[in-house]
Length: 284
Image (cartoon, rainbow, N blue to C red; front, side):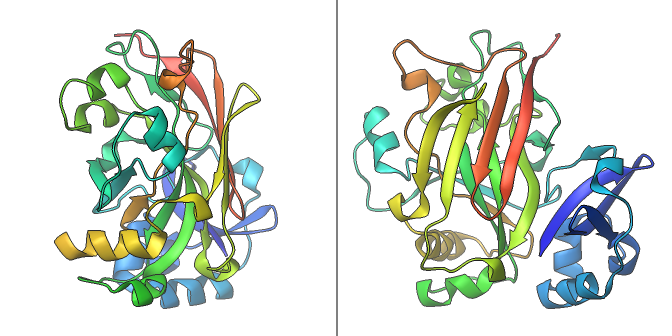
C-alpha cells in the first residue's frame, strides 16, 4: 500500500493510493495526520481500513502534498552512514551511528518549495535519503526484531544550510530551517519490500544525477539503526528515521554545487517513487 498526506478543499487529509485515485481515510481514522492514525489505531487496523475504503478523488485533484508523516513525535536523522560520504567529509570511522534530530516544523511536502533561508546566501545542500517510518512502539528493540517495527519507507531530502551546520560540533542549526526537510511523495508499506533486496536511492539536481547508492552500502543497517536509536529513546508509531545520505553532496564538490533559487531537486527511492521540489529563495 502507498499512503499519503495531502490537502484538498483547504483541509489536511490522509489516504491511500489506488492507481491514480485516493481512498480517503481521514474520517474513518478519526484524524488527519498519518502519525496520529498509527498511534491511535495501530498499523494493522489502519491497513484494514485502507483495504476496505473506496477510491475517491483523483491524485491530480489534490491541492498539495503534505509531508507524508507531518506529525512524528521524533525525526531521528543519521549522519555519515555511507562510506563514500564519510570519506568526502573527511570523518573518521565510528563504532556507533552519528545521530541528530529534526523538528517536524522543518518539513515540507512533495511538489512544495524547499525554502533556502536568507541566512544561507550561498544556497542549500541536497541530501537524498531513505526514510523509515515506525509501525509500533518499542524500547531496546533487538536487531532481529527490528523489521517488525517498520511500517514503511519514503524519500527524504535532508537539505542543509552548511554555514549554520558548521557553527558548532552539533548539526541542529543547519538542519532545522523551515521547509528544508522534504518528505514524500508517499509512504510505501514494508510488505512491498524484500528485506534482503537493497533499496536504490538516486538524487538529481536539474536532471543531473548527483548521488546514487542503495541500502547495501550503509555502514549501519536499518535494523542496527532501529536497535541503536531505540536504546536511548522509545520509538513510537509514526516516528521517522532518516537513514543517511550517500556520497556526492554539493559542498564537497570542486567547485561546490549548492541548490539555488529555481533549481529542481529530485530524490528517487526504489519502490516508493520520486520526491520533487523546486528551491525558492526566502525573501527576508
